[in-house]
Image 1: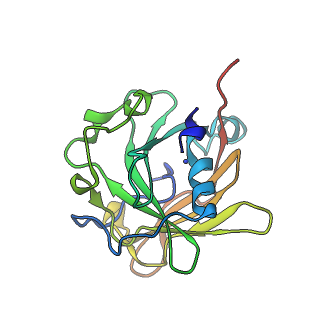
Image 2: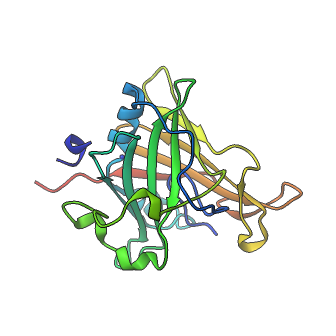
Length: 219
């Protein structure tokens, strides 16, 4: 139903903390391409890093819930994203809104927005029939410079990243963050790192990416 309806060391999905500006990012996007729709379709669902964590305790057991929102809008494909430790699913450590749009060059952009105020007010919203239906894009805070640019590969998967040095942050001594992503039907791979002004990594996994597997409902 979900797919038919349309996508420190803790990882973010498609982008992590960075500079914030108010208002909607411009320019207004065109209708999503088939590739953009496919990327959004694949993102939607439930994800877990439990398998990787069981093999390597340097990687934490994390769950991600992604749900389509505002499906009547024509300015891209919107979704609500909630991430939490598997041991504390009622207190997500990251909540975001994504706007998936098609760039002029045909690639897919995942624009990242932050919820205003205390995001925990919306914790668990992914369970609702229409998540965040009481909000609208004008109430969100775009995370400037943190768009993830995704390209479809010959094998069908998507790969992409933030642009080097553009996703600004002041978290734990970092001045910018980088996020690399690979997305396929049943696997989401993310590698998020923070770098200081000299280009030295100061936080994030040094062993490689987090690997999330799609969690399918029990029959």
